Length: 83
Image (cartoon, rainbow, N blue to C red; front, side, top):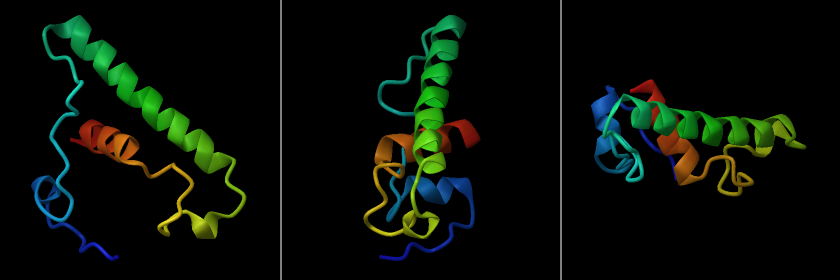
């Protein structure tokens, strides 16, 4: 399945992407909670990048069988940080 290139970040919040501005478990109660939530997002991305660095074949990264690096949690974390 091919997704169209979005024209803006807000396009990612609607079909076919349906990403949320922030993950459901993002804590925004105060500055310390926000910092901890962003640290968790960075950790999720760091772990995904470690999988990428150890991937046997880069050609298989973007197919339907991407070895877990492109799971919803990691993509949501990337989107949230970019946003």
